[in-house]
Amino acid sequence: MARSSGSSAGVIVAGLTAAALAVIGFFAYQASAAQDRAGKPSTGKTAEPSPGTSDGKNRTPAEKDTALPASSGQGHRVVYALKRQRVWLVGKGGKVTRTYEVFPSTVAPEPGTYKVTSRASHVTGSDGVPIENVVRFASVDGVTIGFSAALDGSTPTPDASRKTGGIREKREDGEALWLHAPIGTRVVVVR
Image (cartoon, rainbow, N blue to C red):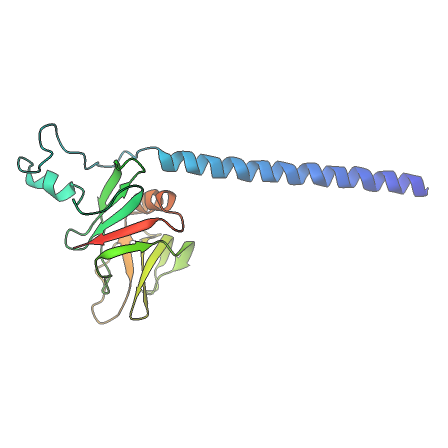
């Protein structure tokens, strides 16, 4: 009987090991698929100049508004223009994969280069609204600054009487930034 329970335990251990390997394989597949999505250009607007307009002189006002700021660094990064209230996701080759408008918070970071310091998939914002795809990169006077999207899709005007650091995005833009900007990604803030 001791042999029978020993072999039964072996079968159970083998079954649990196989199940664990299947779960690990599933998570590895999901992580790989997320990285594949992050590397593909989105269907959002891009800020590539029209042929013959590399100096910016012949661009329409709309093209100038979506053009990547000239002094925004090199390589893979996120660029945030304070006055234009716009973000650009820039890939390794310097190509803009997505640009979109954002809704700024009451506290803004100074122009400069930062790095993504933390992320959260779902939390409650400082305004009490449930948010997702939170990507934090700076702190100003104790207020954490980061990008996020409200689960309900809202983009409210911030209450000027409260110090908040959440730069709100539309949900699809928040997902794109989440996939583009793991911890350590450079965030370049320009005027």
